[in-house]
Length: 284
Image (cartoon, rainbow, N blue to C red; front, side, top):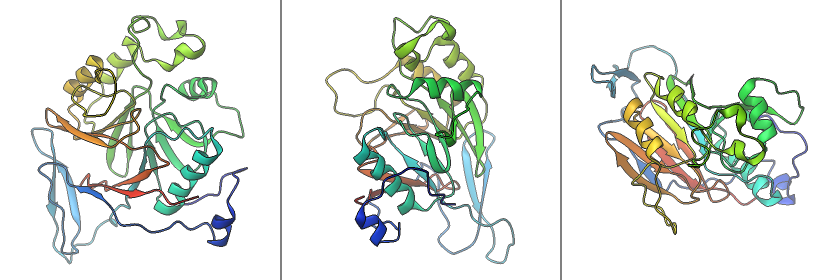
């Protein structure tokens, strides 16, 4: 579970508390549409219906099977190159005490205490991101992170896919090797087309939002290429970063949740029911 990362400055308060977070009550608790959890202590089996949606059935209380998976930690933008936000990021890790984490971009810290699957945002160390993209990481400052960039992994029985980067119309048709410097922050058509070929995706991570997410911005929010990806994959849940505020909508049959930044809130995702809960990030 928890691995204390290297070279992370801790506050006096954290030392006094023995690196333990402060418990808080969840303030965002909803169930994915059509999913009912088990409240009787019996185990739950997750299956797919013929239509591709996740369904859940109860086993009897005396059934024996694998233990119930622990909730995953889910984090919005971190911007952890800032010392205060870096401390807040690790306060969230300690408070959640999870075995695995999902993160929605603008991470800027790549030595993390538990396995963390993330999509790159528009603010990253793009040398590190490109090394992760090609499996060429050779740095003691990069540990515990896996980049999702048009691919899918299975975590706690869930198939989790990710599209890294954000959209720029001037870069979208270019081959990825032609993107240099800060332009590497963008996704290109080849990235989107590769992601569309994935199958049986339960959860999609994106930094760029689809249309319809009700966030407060001075411009129209939503990217047609993320819309197309949701049409192709039809995931149960899409988690979105970038906008630094919590917001929810639906796109077709997909529940779309934009996440608050990690220095404000952290989330926990039940891998069986896709219930997403939120708690305030403890002071660091």
